[in-house]
Length: 582
Image (tube, rainbow, N blue to C red):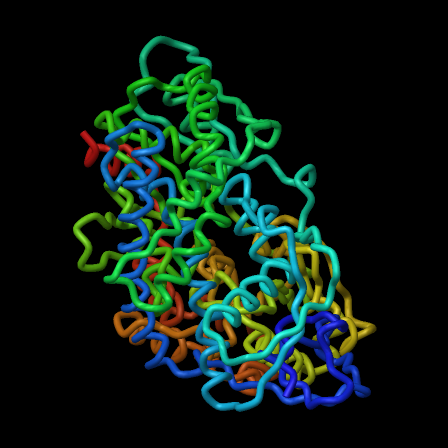
């Protein structure tokens, strides 16, 4: 049987049965466009089992700490430093988790298929492997990792390492891998917010990418007596040769390592971003030339601790010198979804984690407010009509969504599309006549969009980078299909909204189940597309009355206080939160 690892025609066999690693290996234009000529089998995905996923996460936490120990010791040695583990974890955590999580996912896919099938063979491409080394964590996570070539390469390396699957090389000469984006297509990622003080003083707190609403950001900057502007640190123009001799040191294994750990550790030399090794010294020198606070008491962000490596270098250095790192929650599902790795890691690297209202057993979490909607108010037009249905794109290959309440592979994406199609198909045509899908192009593929356009060719679609709530005043109701920040923002702004909830990709943690049950009782959350469509059809002419009923408002306000809190005095509340860093 011939094993197909990614969606490439040259990997198919005409003489053998073809076995796909997953449905993402074929028909990736849209859900309803099928290649009927090809005959194949599709293997079962190993993480369909929640119990296995939970068990594997515990294992991966151990491996993560082991790899981090090895990395920070080797990086200190190369850079002639004695920095603590926390310094390096602030820099490495996101890249390392994506690399580890994605590689183990693919390792288990191959291992489970090999266990169930005999006499497997596959076709592979031979690549220029050094070209898989990223400049920074953004290039790895947003371009390399999402490409067919990276996925095929990882699967190939796993097959070679595990053994037992015959393979033949398709190409004679080594291939230059193609990624999702070219280097000159990158948006501004590695930058710092430089400041020009209007009056002396107030450089004790450094704000960068806090996700404050525009009005709140302006008021906060004036309060802190600063004018700000962003300055890019252009690492992509550095021309420093690879140091493969040093990189090979990262691949050394020990007797304590199991088979997977040896494998994942062996490829770090081809996956570690250059900014942490070859570009490190020059990048630090550029940061020193920036007009940023030299000794801030607090550094606060909501976004740039994730992929902005320059900001992370600056933050880690200042934390080393005594600064406190505050991270504000930046999206939905925090405090709500089960298995949220981002939440745990961000709490771990921060001194304080400011939530949208919830508080767990972590000593670092501090209830704050939803900063994105401060001072915003959405007034419905008198002639508002129809529904607005946000459409999101997700990665089709097993992705980096870490079970955050969103689909993380093609099977779950197809399920989310089916939910939308089912809902729309059951809503009265008179309502649909003034309804629209709202989408934003976030990736270089439009699988969900094309699927919906194929199914509803006469439906209205609008493209907008604006948040759904900002353009919702012309519509009677927002219909969310993913437990994301859009749902929480609408609740926070008291905009009529419903959520079609699917536990297959929106798994809740135990502490939030009761809160969602209350939303179900007042018909804000619905368990199925059929139930949601029935509600819309029966209540469309009475949505305002439904939304402003005393019981719904009470339930909604209690939910928001915990997961999407409002602030009547945001500057005062911000000042109070920052006092914990003094």
